Length: 225
Image (cartoon, rainbow, N blue to C red; front, top):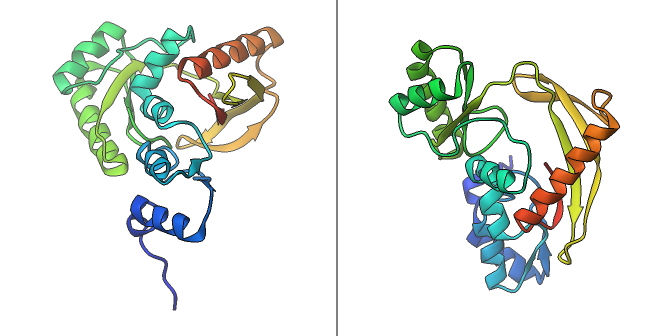
């Protein structure tokens, strides 16, 4: 019975993928999602073989794949960001200090990855140490990066993503939004467009800010903000 190779020997093996691409004479690679899609080392490796990466540049990936640097880029671009500490939390004591400055409740959030991993809601100082330890451990296990940052916890928010597409000439277009607020365990269940919960005025403001962010990070190809 055929068993596929582990991801570390296949989908995550940059050297092996480059060998196969060169052998087949392919001119470009589309990374799909997950695995190497947000790893800046992959487009750099392809570039050495003069092979196009169908996606953003390595420099853009480096900025946007990490939530701390992505949030700082968003702030510089004039995007409304959730209040919080713009940097990595060093330890539980630092987390407690920052949480009090931001004011409870707060969200401890992994700087890397996604899917709700490494996220903890904290309502009081006595919860900080356990939340910090469990969040960093989960982030390290899931993403090989235990970096955590803190922001204000927004109760009953709406999760809305803006689809954009951009080219290398600086042309950027918003393709609409997705209402993704119906979730279970931080995983989306239903996505709807257009969102019935925002006004046209708010929608257009979100579009403008997304375009500004795309320009700030030098983004091209398609993505959601």
